[in-house]
Length: 99
Image (cartoon, rainbow, N blue to C red; front, top):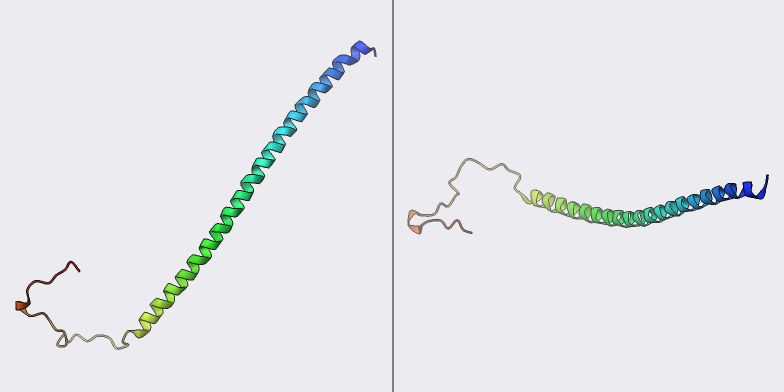
């Protein structure tokens, strides 16, 4: 094989190596971008876990308050007798419903 025959082969090999280098550069850039996105998503997930834990604590506290309020209610069912009810006298005027 003569030198003139080798040059096209070397040129093709250089072109192939250049194309491979460009593909590797794009792959590396994509990997770096995905690593940044992954880091961002992990931070967001951590924040979501913290928010969820806080909401669970608040729900537990609200449940405790509801249970406490229910425990303070009288255990006897209300009777149909409304004699204990103090109805406003007719002379007291209209009831203010804006409260």
